[in-house]
Length: 212
Image 1 (cartoon, one colour):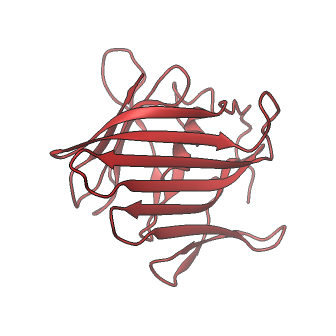
Image 2 (cartoon, helix red, strand yellow):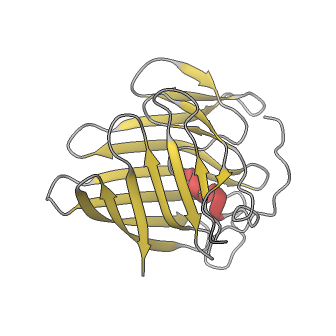
């Protein structure tokens, strides 16, 4: 992969964040569990990570579970290896990012079909993008454009526009084609989101508002 512009990554410490969740008329709560494998206060460059989002719905439906795991690369930032998306009682959909030798390109492979694509440099999954922006000290002022792969076989280029007029940093990603994803992201002072939402052509937006 070609090198990305240098970033002095500020990997956040381990944390469990709590959110209120809405999706149309549905309400719920969520936890975002960030767990790097390195010991407390140690440098995290090169260690493995796990990032897990669990959503519990107030209507008693089965919870949603998103999980990203990979490595914290000192050059490229988060380098996800696998992402799983399990919603309710349906089976999990998975995205794997595979290395083809030490110098070979990475490949994106999905559980939903046999297609494989070359992975763009710095590609993130549908959860690791939050870590990518949280670890970049410049992201609140100018978040980097990101290639983001999802579990249904999609690969999108997320470019950000400033949103809001109250002076607080808030960012919006507009859909660029049919069935594309709209994203809103407002960072808190610690780099993790204060609010974030994902909206696609099919179904209402999933919105998470941080609490505590």
